[in-house]
Image: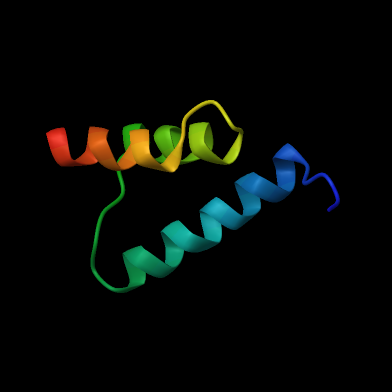
Length: 55
């Protein structure tokens, strides 16, 4: 499996956020940061879900 650059991860996240926002939802900067933490390997998906449920 090839390494994905930070720029590619940011591009993918921005596309996902745009898609969600087109549907009428809002993604906060905090939520975007947490998503990047998952994509960068600094947080697991399970930790992300737990933090979102706590909000």
